[in-house]
Length: 257
Ligand code: ADP
Ligand code: MG
Figure 1 (cartoon, rainbow, N blue to C red):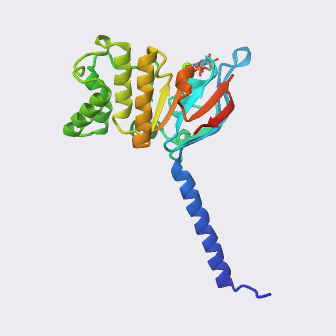
Figure 2: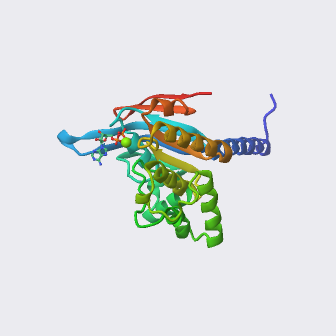
Figure 3: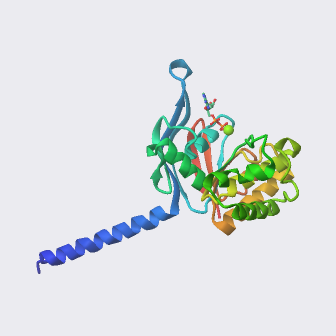
């Protein structure tokens, strides 16, 4: 048997390392969200509530995922933790391979502003701002120039059927219109991830279905990653992946073609 020279051994190990590094880079490039052993508890002693227990989820870029489960099963808790709006009791959240729980408050809010769009169940629009201003607000924080801001707002309002409503305040819009403003606001900064907590819960079924079509179109055309919670069977049917929660535990995780 021929023994390898130190130089040959060195060459081989270098090759192995390069391959490993390349493989890792490919995997991590596609993973946008990862949670490891994620837990969230509220209260203590007799009042302890385990809202989320040991959630291990990996979501690839461009996935269209529904989180389903009965009321109180931990859907909102999970979305809030993924979005960095709440802190886990234990476990970690990685977004674009960065551990958000290791970021300082400022790093996290900058990261959230630049990478995540959040659509809340209750819209959370700013009541004193017009629809246009609500949508524009985050771009002001980002320092996007006015011409670019106007262009993006106009395009989105057109896509979402909100033309002519830019000057209205939230109270002067219907529920469906407010929800579309909230969607526009979440998308205008072109985040890579959109998190939506029961986005169709307050909409009639036709408006809800339209909203889902729009989300799906953005997902397909722009490869935006969507994670949304719902307990509407019609909405969950249209997801490409369904993660089911019961009492804070993931009981099923299925991809569909
Ligand atoms: P879902 O969105 O599926 O309805 P949640 O994530 O809102 O469920 O809640 C999961 C569990 O955690 C519930 O039992 C809820 O009462 C509890 N919970 C959520 N937020 C809090 C909180 N801030 N304080 C105490 N308990 C909470
Ligand atoms: Mg909820």
